[in-house]
Figure 1: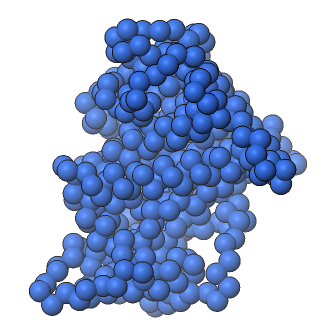
Figure 2 (figure 1 turned 90 degrees about the horizontal axis):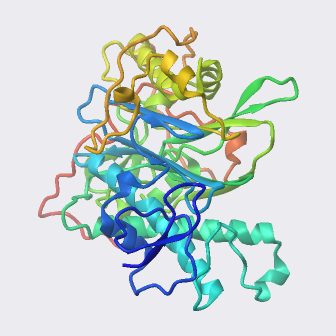
Length: 471
């Protein structure tokens, strides 16, 4: 199949006859077959070998990623950094936290498929603008010059394109999971926090309780934390209102009074600890949705780095502590690992009798720079530990603590003894239902005792199950 591919960030478009390795960097003016770009890449089954795409412990030109299995079983977290995503100046990052019996499979499926769906949408949009000729796609999404151009600026148009890309891609992703022949997502699902950095533009789409923050310099040249996303928990007023309107129930268990969960209207199951997720189709009729929150931010020279992480990190570390740990890392390449190790230490300190959750971290440095190889090797991070493998299994880090900064306990999460003095959290919808800016609200991933898991138990359907009205 004759396709135009780019095999490195600096290479020009070239034609290949075998199509063994494909990078979706650009398309030159060749006529393509009816197969879509998304189908072309996925059918090759060579996603792990695509240049500048990392999905296991390792580093890239401008980022480092690391995950560690907790004490609850198989690691259900997944992560990805894809540089040269659609052009040399575009980077895609994502963290996905699975839950349920097949949560690890859902998270990996979303990790691999969602970026492809976003690319497919953008390529389709570009093709419509170019007519029958497919030109090099360098990430400059052009507007169609129609009537809508008169009413909005190019920046607004770009923002609208990316919003549509996230919304449609998330919808298509959930639809694919529902109809997947070999993946049972009825009581399994995944969160997603995804960002696209295009020049100075930062576009974000997210569902669930994984979180993105940014380290930025303030007027005193100190690095401060800015929260970029909101943890979409069931107790958020607008989330609780929607769930209750769809006949779902929101309440917390007595042994974890500050962890509100979503329950079926006719059974005390499954107890999902988030309001939006991929999969979890047993709750999709009762208020749990996969529609992402979308936001756009203009980056400045003061913005230093972005951290994406699953809730295993946020359950025990505050935004400020995470920024401090990344800022103090001896090398940029070691930042993600040190952050995960610090979270693991906090779990042992605060919850010695609890099972540590899986942790996954992506650190993206906005100046596009990374350490030299010599600096990298000095930290004793071997290639076997920090590079990708193609088996799909994460390599756990050891418990080395020599490079980590010493942190005080932040008490963001209370110990089990302290929780006895707190009553059940009442979850009621707020009348105004207004959405607060993410950077103005330091929503905690969990402001109480850590949950046992994202799901309490599977539904127990009986013959007396009522026929729910689909709203």
